[in-house]
Image 1 (cartoon, one colour):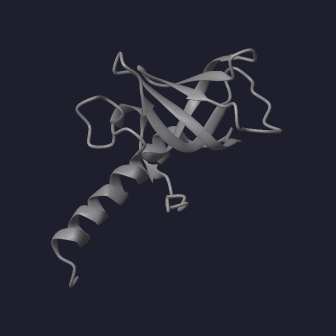
Image 2 (cartoon, rainbow, N blue to C red):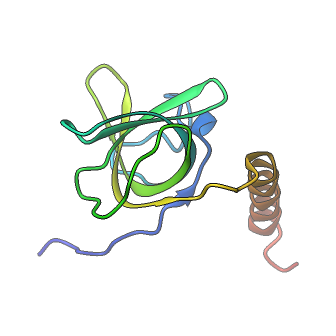
Image 3 (cartoon, rainbow, N blue to C red):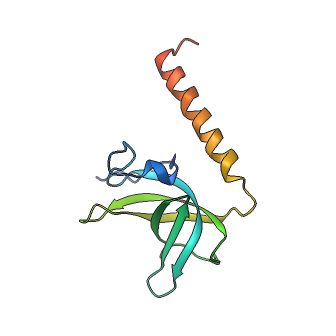
Length: 125
């Protein structure tokens, strides 16, 4: 019988979603934030950007979420790697997070990773 467990989305930045990254794996459950660059109502594909990094997000399973280009969104879902090595996030959760300070968000993400690395290396501390 197949497992129906839904995994929490690992916090990642769009910079982390390059083919050389350990997060760039088929089916990886991820949580990302980016500014909406484009959205197609016909295909349900959104394009989010963060700096020079870009990611396509399939939003076909999201309901009651209004998309506005230029707004900041957070998505949780699974990464699907296409044959051309492009990642597309299949979103299961999405929300508008306008007002979030992206620089502060990236700083907190770096601090979280430092803490996790230190804790994993020294579990007694």
